[in-house]
Image (cartoon, rainbow, N blue to C red; front, side, top):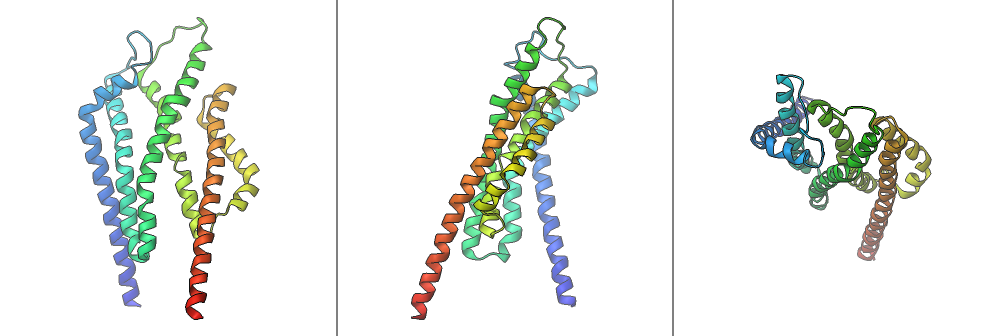
Length: 251
């Protein structure tokens, strides 16, 4: 009983160590990015097309924008390290083959997150922003504040970085046998409804923004179904090959 308790305590200590390392990498990344925040800021607003670009309503808003930009970039930098630390934590419980497979998820997690951010920033965000600005039609004086502009951008862009991780999650759950392509097809209507609700909640309250936000999420679900089908077929082939090899060795 004592050995088991000590083993559990050691696991918690190991997990705590991994979390602390992740936190340290995030803080260091954010601190370094503070020196490059101005360059990132100027790049992000380069296509805004508004004279005197953005305004601040107080000195503290300048500081908050610095930390906001540095924090978002630090998250992107920390994600692969966090995935690697998670892998190191669970690796002792895996077989050699499982270690190789799960280790291959780490670059996929990072690349999909970056792809989601790029897609949200280059495709979804400008379409929503331009539509909202066109609604003005000369009725209002458009005045951009830095804080509201960047919070609006992050609310639109960051969810796509997270949602683009779904294919990796689907592959992982399919390999575990929790998800199957048949099950995902049966869940399609419910999944569509949930994704549309997510798109409506994350986008500004207008039909075009809701559509621009929801359609990529529905397409992403169909991509996940395809990925699950490919993963499931490969898993079935591996199982058949293992059964055949076992039967041959018994014979």
